[in-house]
Length: 290
Ligand SMILES: [Zn+2]
Image (cartoon, rainbow, N blue to C red; front, side, top):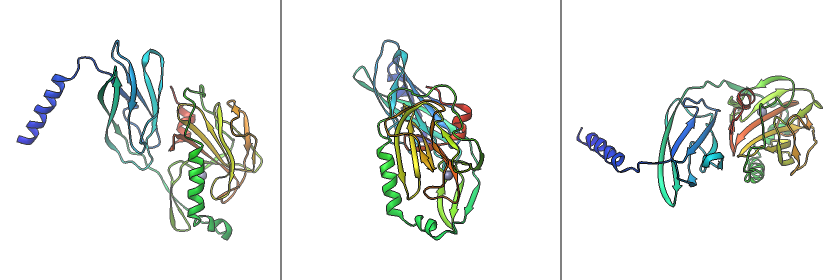
């Protein structure tokens, strides 16, 4: 009892000596689910200038922030698919007029259920790819190296398009076992479609990577949409764009295929905030607002 009352006294003392004016940290939505994009915004107090923000949250070491009108800074962070419901306190270190301020906020996450999927890879050549851990790691490092320098302003606009027509065959977040071995949760959404069907850019951006990566992704295109928002398209039979190209929303970027680690032709479609995969169907249905 004594300890907790000391804590309360301490908190009151801190509040009493806190500066009258301070920046404000806001995180939206207040009740996210795993797979959601969280919008993190720092509003300066009147007459103050935000010079820098340092913030880690969930699995993201350093949220990237970008300037908006009025000295406001905003960034995005993905809420990982393996988190449970509950309270998540969040803190940011903010430099204001040469002084550090510690800002707090919190979100109360809601539970999201993800089904379990058991996949059988009967083809020996394909199945052996799941044990090629060195190749898988090298591929991941290569893709990550192309996703470090997102454009510092939104390149996307408005709603996000489904990149191909077809039925959803496996949703984001599914807990997957391949030939009985834990394979991880599904980073994207699979859309079943025949080889050769046109795949379009879900939104406008710049091609951060266009490469053939045989261990897992096959022919793969990564689009940088700015502000650390990316979309990824895998297993293509053909790639129609090159690294550095600007792409418009709805522009053809490739064709559906069955390259890489697959059981058959489909598009594996991802959306990520930095390296954190978020639910692409929620991006398509709800958008991302800067
Ligand atoms: Zn997939």
